[in-house]
Length: 498
Ligand code: NAD
Image (cartoon, rainbow, N blue to C red; front, side):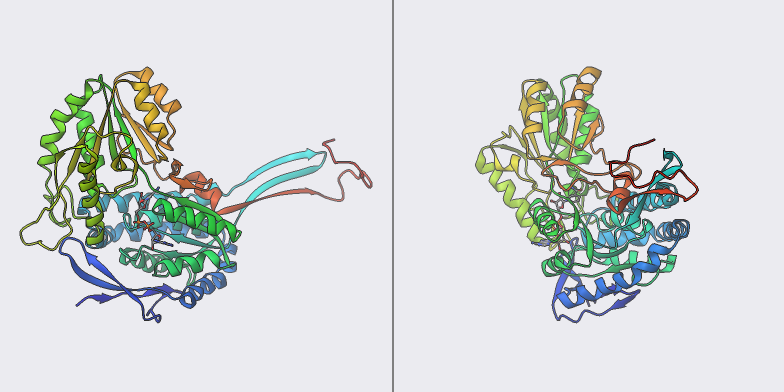
């Protein structure tokens, strides 16, 4: 029997009343595991009302007390790490160890948020003018909304929620309807940690719920992570409604391999980055740019490794790669492999049509590897978001850098080389937000900030780290003097420092 999920509003689980439900699958078996309510506009407005009512008291709670709640939240996530990881694997499909890693990366943002008293300290100048002092503080925005994708059911909500809450905001999260259970668990843990009712709400739903959040005047900011067309729509619509918006979008991350690289290191890097999590990562490497003789050296190593990838259910400890998230997504990814063949790329390893004994209805595809991909091909231009690696061969470093920079996406990029000059040049000139030197998935830690360039982001603020604190607060600068200070009389000219 499939479970029926609920919303979490005002500190309690609430049944959906819209009558609309979506199926949540177990991708390993293809079975429907749960039924998720899709909120009506009224239900979304109910969540916003709960968050609005909770805002004044939470914003008035001292940063130190909010931090103490975050410390308890951190403890509880640690205690429930295996359970959260299992929820991720059950609905997303990724292997358990990878799911654990992703929960840990989310936990680290909670750890970062525990330092909020320090982060909100502000700046002070004594004597901006004689006996006049000035200081800047950062204050919360109000009710913040988050809209998250399917591929990181715990980590991406935790890129937003801990920082927003620690800054004194209240929050309405609309998780992906494909993987909703983990967000509900996080809301329960937050309540247990002492987050007051209404401060953190989870409303399940799809497009209609998102549109309601974007249009409601009580929502101060929108944090979005998902595909490029939706990110652009969320950014444009949210901004048109006067909101602060950060919308992180799709990717096509290039990894350049120079002829002097350590090819074994590069091959290991590519295997993990292209096929880990079945390629369903915004920091996945989906293009290997092989410079000169690196092409043959890489292919010699890659082909047997991709052929030998262990694909299986995420709960099997011997699996290196799990299934894709839905049958629909499997069809899309297989369709791109078909297209690559029609476009003339060399499909060296074909993972299509994989059937696993005992899991015949699971959404599996094996690793796919294309050689001789060119930049005009659609499989090169589009984000496929599956275990499909395209190898593009180029003659030199300048060509490799140019094609990387010409691609519309600029989330991450990596260079494998032993040449310090090339590495320095690459770091300086590459048009990407997150750069790896002999590191294939350079995801910044929680105390740095996460975000790409070009069409991989809409909006100016990255997530978590210092950028997250800036996004979730408004700056206020106060200038003050006391009557005992100097009296200049009425001043009709622009005040200057005296
Ligand atoms: P998606 O865009 O389909 O969905 C993201 C969210 O938007 C979900 O909550 C969904 O319900 C909602 N949504 C979907 N269609 C909508 C519409 N038409 N109008 C309003 N809301 C809509 O993305 P996904 O398939 O869940 O996630 C995969 C995508 O996310 C990939 O493109 C990946 O690169 C991207 N991603 C980016 C980052 C990053 O940091 N840049 C991180 C993770 C994932």
